[in-house]
Image 1 (tube, one colour):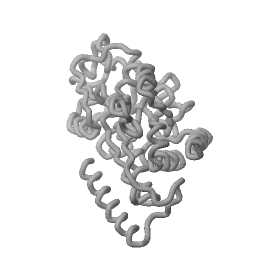
Image 2 (cartoon, one colour; image 1 turned 45 degrees about the vertical axis):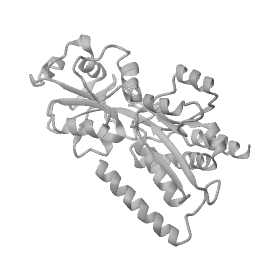
Image 3 (cartoon, helix red, strand yellow; image 1 turned 90 degrees about the horizontal axis):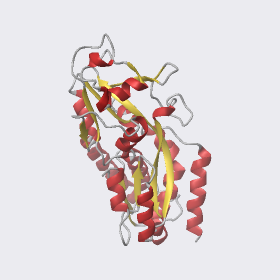
Length: 318
């Protein structure tokens, strides 16, 4: 994955040189000829979506603006965002901002704008050699990861499954995905002892790929980009098994119990002080639907995206 990212950056740099030789980009944003930097951190889940938007923006809109996207995780990202004097310009988040984070923003005088960018589905994945757990009920998923359920082997989950130890994986506590899984799916019950939690999603994919008895949870986008390495489990929420897909991952869709919105949070002060930050914010919301589909996210309604664009363009007039 890191290798692919390096290739993309090299290709992007070549494209920028070509555009520069031809007289610059299209400059169809709110401001032509902008320069400077836009600093984004936060969710590893939202990282592919925001990276796509950043690359397209630098190539097609503002060649002299550097949009830097990192992935410390939602919670770790908020610590970089909520800094006295102004931290990062955006924090990507796979959960809503918490009350204590909003309180800190108010104490620091940071006005935060929540921008919903897409919908994601928590996807339960297994090794390609796992030919038994193709479908699980929602309760079986919970029991696999629940400390008090005592499911040590696959045979403890369902009769007919092999008598082999379950190896559990997931993102660590820095990630909003972990918090959503624990709070919403596990109902804040203790996770099983010995679960292997990782910071990097590429590491999780690799671990599951190498372990026949592995099971893991993370966002749909990371499964969608690794379908050659992983199998996604269909989940029965009570009306038959549902496969995670861009069609089922909707707020009122068949996969709704495991569906969540993902966000980016904007520091409005930074946006008003630095025109390139506001310009990128407007561009991102205008193009979120297209970028979402290309990076494994389901789009939110166009009216919601347009409402965000209207709000941001209003800031541009102030």
